[in-house]
Figure 1 (cartoon, rainbow, N blue to C red):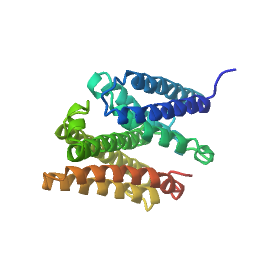
Figure 2: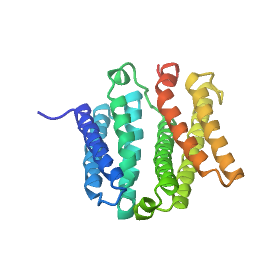
Figure 3: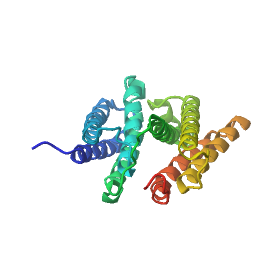
Figure 4: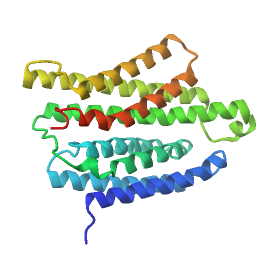
Length: 271
């Protein structure tokens, strides 16, 4: 009996959970252990995750980003796909130890039955599909920025309280982590800006207005403003690495906690 897309995704979430448990071992060892095993766990999870998305897409005969379940799984897939590219470099494989708890949490949330119910969006226009893809990719970039921020705070803590462990750790220098989280946030901001611009153009085409008084539109503008302020403050004040890290984590947590509610309140995105 063939597995359904939901069952494949459930297997992927279970593997993310195993990776999360293994990550505790890596953290306790200060990342001095070879974490190839964790990389292959994430790879196996990503394969199941990808199969789940393809099965859903083929069954719907369209890009599977048309409801909350599909959007959430797409964001998680973006994060794990980027990690697997980074993990091709051995010194960057430790990123999985920080990414796996986030992926497991997102996966468990996505499996809530309520997210895969009700009407789905019919993307009859290429502009609408491009809008959705850009927005979801931006959330993936914000998620990776939050992962880098967690690593930054870990290194910063070790430098303050466990200097020897920080020296022996396989984590990259703190200034490099600061660059990574800043650039990922900037990349996500650019993608979000492009996605909102495409969405505004699509609204103009269909309704004659660039703006709709809609909960999701207002929420998206708030997310855009939040990351704009974060990036401007980082540019204005050079020495706010720790604060930027907390901001990157807080921004992505805000996205995760409010994304569902904003969709439910939106007549456009939840018809």
